[in-house]
Length: 269
Figure (tube, rainbow, N blue to C red):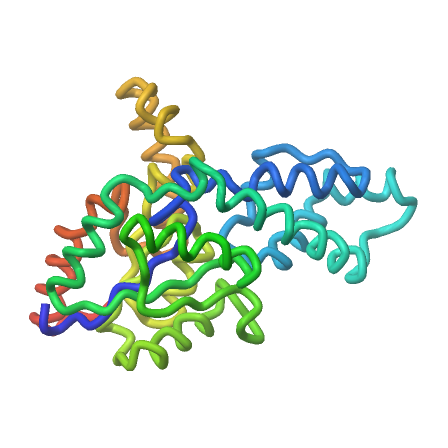
């Protein structure tokens, strides 16, 4: 592992909140409060972006934009996006601390312990704001997960898919070059930030947003259904630039070993 220095993890759907389900109800509810009905599938579309950017992306979807015009008689404005975001944040913050949304994904604590035992630093980035993360941090720590840093949406001028949050991680963790780091994420924008930064990237297919199922729902799937979910999620993550795709964080160690071996041979992302 001497060639590798850090693994930088996303939060919801990657290490916590199987299926990345906490924001979904909050998105649906906040748009309803503004007179617009949106679906869970629509809400999931821009997942991984900073929440304000996520809301802007939703408002630009043709069907949602038409519903907004029908409800308000005009196009959505930046002031409207600010208002929706301001209403969304406390809704999401109230939900993230509730089970099962605050529960670590199976294998997360063990994988992080495995990484640390091999001398790797653990960074983290998220599309959540600090207000949303505040109640979640101590709950995650009590379950055995406390990364070495946290970079949130809104901390920097630009979030995903830019590399800015990754650059902050490099500085916080005192690691370089980017090729000595691995980004793990369950969304295309999260993979894209790792690619933009020059890191190795690993997509998480079955525990994250692209699949969108709770642990219980996933376990109830047939082998064929599970394979279909895996294929669909893997396609989206690889299209965003993922070098590897795993089912969940529990499957990360062999990939980390392979990346370390590739680095030792002089390969780069």
